[in-house]
Image 1 (cartoon, rainbow, N blue to C red):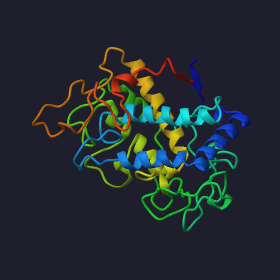
Image 2 (cartoon, rainbow, N blue to C red; image 1 turned 90 degrees about the horizontal axis):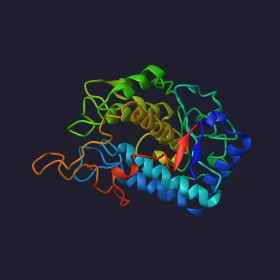
Image 3 (cartoon, rainbow, N blue to C red; image 1 turned 120 degrees about the vertical axis):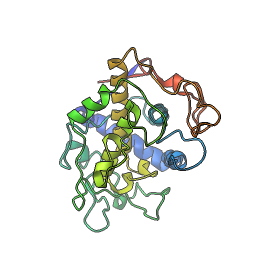
Image 4 (cartoon, rainbow, N blue to C red; image 1 turned 90 degrees about the vertical axis):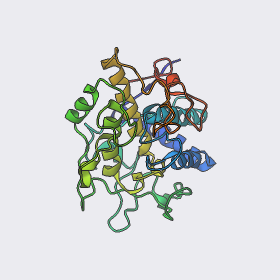
Length: 290
């Protein structure tokens, strides 16, 4: 049966509680930390050798779609009624938004060490210790809006410009691709400085800041709500461009191409799963967005 992912602002109090409790149970069992490990392992910069599937590559969108599905299935083993909500950051743009309430994601980090002190994922409540990280920090951190180096969340016009690109991705299939929906959505730029370098997906990670920066960003549960919205925008792009190729490259870059063996083509599996991008181009038989 097709289930629904809802905007977090429209969740009932019971739905918010069910989602939080399922996430906390995954953390208690150790299953949540496995998701953190996976993201750290596959967060491979495009300057590194080897296959890139999670970031700075065409498979950014299908890889995270599969990642979300794996997480959602784990949640549903705890509570079959739970789905991953999404955070529309073009509407809920303030640290005062309901997203950051005491009964849901918790609030901003405190001044000084940026430790989150409120909500179910506060370290002081004893149920959310960072066991897998790229630093030695053991508590969730945030610096919403980065007041000392301010950054704004993307706006509706940014989304519209991104959705307007009719081509899924372009060579060289990495963070330097100057057009294409995938890199416009992922948000890498060249020739810019400061916060202007980060757009769309990347800009939201930077706005939340704290542990949301870098490969261990899964340690902040808001990661899933952010990526559910990114996934919904990909769905909207597909609907807006029905005659466009839904994924590129459709064949592997040839031998001698700098990206040969470094990006997943349409029918090539994306580790750690034996799932190609082609299998993830249509989610409508599994879930829908409200």
